[in-house]
Length: 224
Image (cartoon, rainbow, N blue to C red; front, top):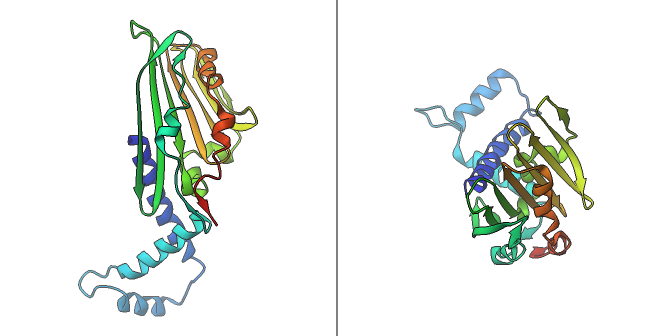
């Protein structure tokens, strides 16, 4: 749930940035700006009228939705795609939820896996970004529009591909911690985080999932 709320926060920040940038091309003489500010502001506080802000928020929201209303996939269907076991690590817990804010809906399912002694663990998450899958999705996962290739003495991080989908890998050899994120059909984000396991085990979790079935849901709930 925390990640979803973080995404909504990033969304709100994006709204603020885009709203502010959208006004940059409407430069006017200082005196005229001052007068307009007075007209649209509270006389005591000088704060710009809330109506103008809300109108701009709605405009940005429509652009990000690309004119489409999207109903997210039921999280129960996403949970069904989670593997029962990964490399001897049984699923110890699974959860799912749907959240909405500012007209955006997000659905997610998560599974937790570990060895009996708890020394090794994996977390697998599937997120349906719905109508956040455009600009809003990129705000949460910037690597989707970038190329990354970085190595250190103890690890690496890089963008790559997995079964034809853009992906991002990050791994620390010293602590054997890492993750891989895969953007499926530009709508679903599949994330696997591993603790005290080699990257091969992390990728094994992906291999045990039917990403093609997930990709087949890309048009679910989309109305033109």
